[in-house]
Length: 235
Image (cartoon, rainbow, N blue to C red; front, side, top):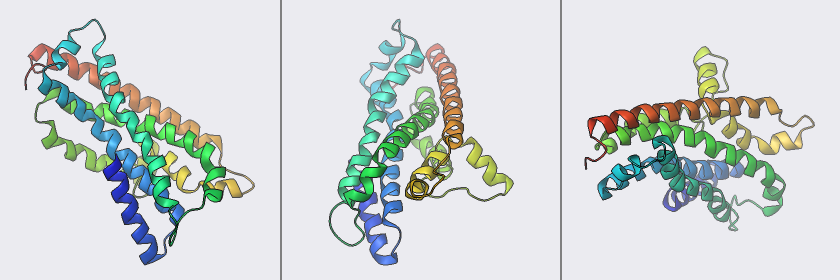
């Protein structure tokens, strides 16, 4: 978390100096990159538990296997929330393009709310990534094949604001793109008379629920298959 956020923050600060980009947007991008990197890599805890030989015991306990996976992943994924305080520390350091606390403090309640929802959206994505770690001991080799398209469609690097069919579809199914877009435009929304409507947040909540339900269902199926085939105990 620290390395991803710190590296992204330094890069974004240099970008603001070189190209005079929006410091606030660069700050949000710094935090989101750190959150994405930490949250999606949390599924790697499954591989760690398998190498220790404890995953088999966790799966043979009385606790439901999906709850075991949720507890394992969330114990690591929750640390991704620290990317926002770290990004704030990076961007309030005086210098060219730094952010003042007078700008950030009015936005803080909204940022905390949207940040928490974004973490929930990323958690649903992480559950799907976790299925690879449950099914195979060589998950690291396949992880990037799944994470790369998910990153492109997450809204961290770009926002599908066009009216073409594929952009509408991506924005509709992405669990985080609407929330990330709200965070990027938060100062504009709060300074305007209309603000941002709750429809975007409600739609995002529905998408997050769908991804989480799909991720849990997929984890149940993958855990059952891995347990029956004896792959849980394999190292």
